[in-house]
View 1 (cartoon, rainbow, N blue to C red):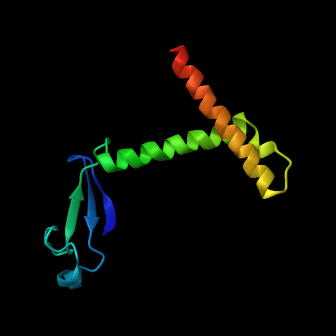
View 2 (cartoon, helix red, strand yellow):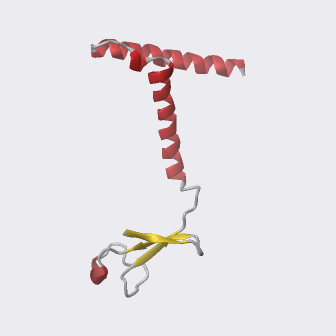
View 3 (cartoon, rainbow, N blue to C red):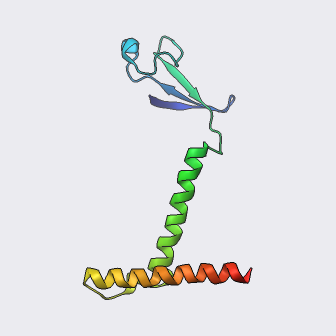
Length: 109
């Protein structure tokens, strides 16, 4: 489906089939509305998203926070090591420190 703009009055997005003459070959043929332009599908821009999307986005943001701690807070990006095993060693030490930080924060609360 190809994005064809939004309808602000109805608060939804419009998607049009890229091949209107071949609507019988479209995999979304049953779920779309027939028109002279081809199959059209409308979706609502619900700001929340699905549970699966929220879970994936939550994992993404948590991994970005961890990468930020590794690279900037603990200075893994500033290390001047060339060997992979040394880099891995420092990454492991940083991971242990982050775990201890979380453990101490949980005990203090």
